[in-house]
Length: 282
View 1 (cartoon, rainbow, N blue to C red):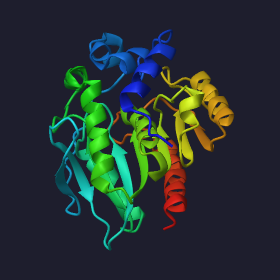
View 2 (view 1 turned 90 degrees about the horizontal axis):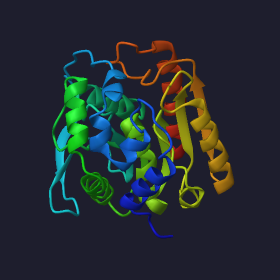
View 3 (view 1 turned 90 degrees about the vertical axis):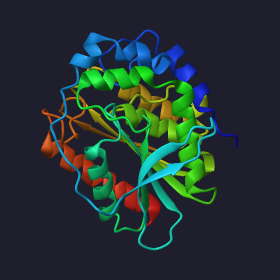
View 4 (view 1 turned 135 degrees about the vertical axis):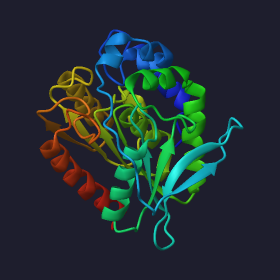
């Protein structure tokens, strides 16, 4: 089965979502034009500035890998303790590959007992936002072509024999699903936290592996109606989707978010970890 191009996925999502407007990481403008969304005041205002945190872990290593556009891409890799072809690609929120993403990636690595390689993919080329204004600026600078190249580079970096799962939050939640589509038969599963779903049933039919969707009932962007539509589309595509809903706000699972919901985040993580252990058989 042919892999769907990242560019095609983004453009088609933009056309289908053009009637929607909402202050979320994947509104219609975010898909069709990241720069335009980053310039919207309502979008920036919907995101609280992250609380300060400094990553002090030692297990991860910064890595550089080739991307098909000729510009090297970057990530932060937690290498399995023993040789393994199992890889979890982690996709950041709109702030970039910051210390919180490294911390969450290390937690996943440790809770998977060091049996799975965890690669946090840097979608902003080593730029990290400290506040929502900087995040908006970096989003404006992120081109679809570059995002495509980074994602393709990450998939190639882990190798043709790799079993790949993707996980992301918000901006990265939608990217995780698109990454799963791009990975083709190598994809073994996707975990998407409150990211914009793919709405094209024909594209969803090409998806390999199950999806775990974590969503917030109070999310004004990825609304319950959008989630319900995703469920219908996945069923029509004949794919496996498990949805967990929480009475919480968008980005509730981000510990750097001032509206972090620890109870909902803990339950969501419990399901996430069980899902990953099952698909990776660890």
